[in-house]
Length: 220
Image (cartoon, rainbow, N blue to C red):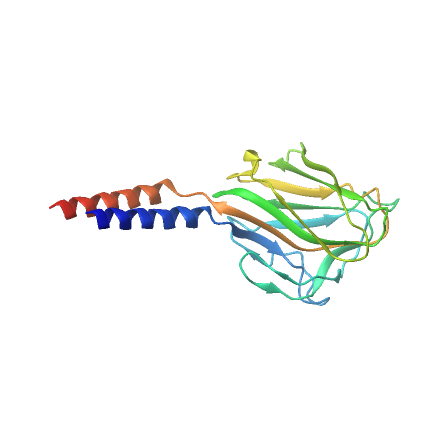
């Protein structure tokens, strides 16, 4: 019986650990070359298909040279294209920004990361915010997050695990904006969202019933 209980504890620990492991929700790498440039997700594990929309500034519709990255799923994304603007601020257009829309049903402890490259030292920061259900009510997550502008790629990552509102929700938008303090070119690549799966009550219940049945059988 002691061995059985020990085995049950080990199995339970494995299940709990697997449920709490961070996994890839979605990633965008914008294609392997200029011909293949796309804003469609490279990979996604969500309900529905998430979208990424670039706007404002002077968009470079072919993108710029990107950055190699090995993602949370262990997949290598070779240098291809990145999303980019030739100028993040022009008089004839709103300032540069990008918005990701996704369904986070079944996910919690979400994190965001991307690689970025800024050409002009006056591009000193960006803002990160979210909204639910496209209401137009944006909630600030980060304000004036520092940018390193030295014409080289740098990585940014941030945990959103303390924002309960965006977890397990059908319509969430994340926005990077307020690059208007800068000028000139800006690019980003390998935009990735990760999180942990919320254990399903039915699965936990079935597992408990199975363990109970094993113990009862053992007692007989």
